[in-house]
Image (cartoon, rainbow, N blue to C red; front, side):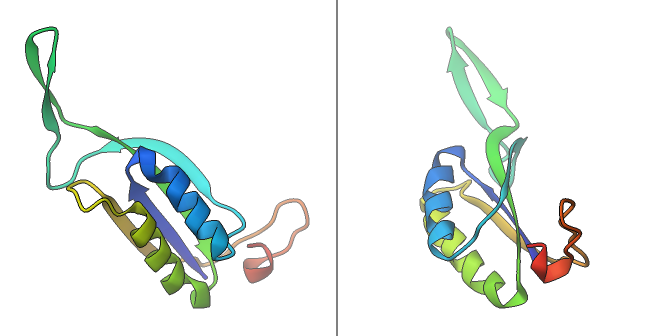
Length: 112
């Protein structure tokens, strides 16, 4: 099993959700987060004063999936979240050691 974690721009969430549902993903967790990458934030003008915005709003998606589906899922997320501009985000794939569905007690692949 794999845990796919994607950090994307907030306005791309609906596009990504639609794309991954077409691949057969049945569940995901979405968290509103803030952060920065290489761009290190940006400068904005507010009421005539310039100020530095260090942390940009992002959305973090976490999706548990089978080993077989992980690569396709990454491709679909990358395609749907891509704007071609700086700050599009990152996708991380890590091993998922165990999963348990609390209601039924199912484990691992059955719990996903």
